[in-house]
Length: 288
Image (tube, rainbow, N blue to C red; front, side, top):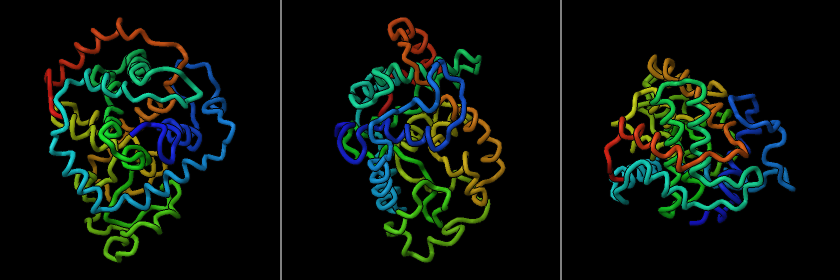
């Protein structure tokens, strides 16, 4: 599936929408004003609405469980983390007006911004790998099952989720057991016990869960869970661990949203540093 097919012109359309929905300054090397990002001729984001209509319709508890079992088998291909970065780089985006940077250059911009601010090495590595789950689209997954705001399934959908009206199309919304505040969960059960909607966040969490620190895993798994870390929803499902770890998700968020810059990183020069960094945490080859 090409990144230019489907309801979005590119995955960056969704990222642009998030940027505009949650505008705030971040540690970006760009000199661009926030209102200058993603300047399309049509600013109404109708393609984003259509994307979320499909996302909210099809992201059911059954669907997410099926996808987690399918991709949890980790039988698609064997490659290293850096090879995963290069694999994602085969995803070509010709429709982004903000930058002509490749996928690999954008990942390096994020990690280099984190590195420049003196954060721990695992934090820098998280910046490099957090979006590698988007390789799902290279396995034929639909856009609405790769990107988009994430949210718990198996309980009532929060009105803090973007375009909540589209959840009326979701089969789970017609199941009374799933539409109570806690649904199938116990109060304060902890997010480790909650099934989240399926996408690149969950997939990369599967890849990294046995290798990265807990703080990094929260950044990877919940960086698109805007209803929680930006709107304060779903606290009734969280436990003390979640509350402590979400400070790391919030610390990561500005780098994720505001690290684009027209200045190109030198991939060849940076590659040895990142290969050494990857080797600290991941095996030389692993199954994806």
